[in-house]
Image (cartoon, rainbow, N blue to C red):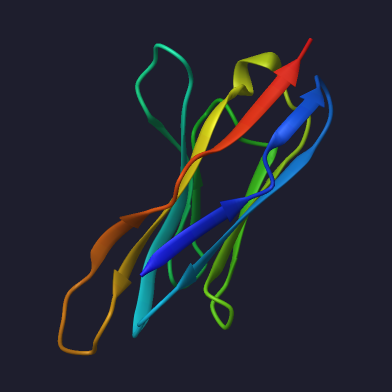
Length: 120
């Protein structure tokens, strides 16, 4: 199983970016999916998560600005980021809890980070 993230880049404060992440490989079912970020010198933190049924959760710092969504048919999860601030600058990582076979439990997989830089 691989998670491939894309969509990072450089944007001015107040701008928008959309991150996408696609899971590939042998997949029976994807449970929760989410996005984390890690800024230089800081711990990795949860940004947003979405359950298999579509329930979402956001960190307080991004509520009202970021929207997480998923396409279960395509095994993808997106993060729409609006009203970006310099403090949103970080490497963003997608994650998914995946069952590869009907007989196995879920395992957490991580994609490689995609860099988001917000200039003031």
